[in-house]
Length: 175
Length: 305
Image 1: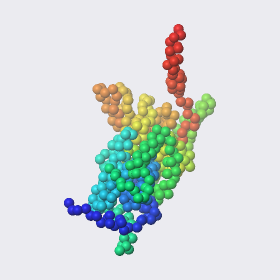
Image 2 (image 1 turned 90 degrees about the horizontal axis):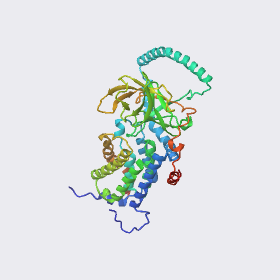
Image 3 (image 1 turned 60 degrees about the horizontal axis):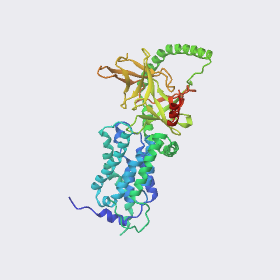
């Protein structure tokens, strides 16, 4: 195993804050992707775009986005996915809590290791939703249910690539 | 787990305190929503807030559908037309008979000064999408509070019962399909009038008829229609056709599976039927009839001969 790549931490020190507009519109974009008419097998495979973007901003802008925002976005997802109010909210809050606790550690890793960390987080979030629905008497939707958290984690690299430009741009200007 | 150095800046409660608070809050939300249906305002306002984004998200699908419609082959249209005409002829005889019967019934009910329990007209709605929820079977239609949709309305399509409206938003509403787990419809067999309850199995395209004795007269191919005794579904709507009957003397009940009559997965338009104008009053429960005597009263009654 090669030694951990510590550059992201150094990069963090130099970067300027992302504007609230960028954060807001990235969340709107993620929500837009999430409410496309997914159905059937596609629905089981649907990556949780909103969670992914929330995790990104909790990592990079911890003062702007926290558990409160995750809770509110979770309620929004509950309404648009016709679920019981509070299921996504709980899953997102727990996921954001994990990311907050391990924030410095995750940022110290490179993209591949970060993806593994995100995989853990998405599994916990999906597990919370699954557990709540099983408690409420739903049937287990099959192992295909776990395709979604895996796909969500695999999308970490593209999301990073898209959103990172908004935070890294200022580093280039800095000496 | 979280050992933070004394903070330079005030940051509010710790993450652990926050996660505890929000966990309790979401559990409170779930209980309030599940048990008491108390958060309709939250649901309504959030759905109104997200409506424009949902509309934008629906655009690409609609565009593709319009494009496909535009280039639909003439051959297919002609064939459809021919089939529809044949169907119209087929049904017109039945329709005339039904008209006659309806006139007779109207005459009879007028004589007994009764009221029709069901209004005539339903609300036609377009299916927008299947609800994005892998745990339940619901569809979302494009009529809501503004079209005076009410929760509980039965929903049908051209061939049978689709389900029931379970949640109404401002401009859309959610319909729970008859195949949803534990969604039940009171039914009867057309052939012999045997009453039963059809319960969704939670699997696509399958409905169970539980609690039928092994001796019950149900055969493969029997058609179940709504019996109307629940006061929600009008009587006579086709619900399902029996696909398999397993009668095993080792069990108390027969295992009966049926296939929903409505195209539960592939229709485009559905009709929301109005709720009965005036339902029969619900029967009094035992508890209401005779309030339970307190221990004191019971003791007094025992003492007095």
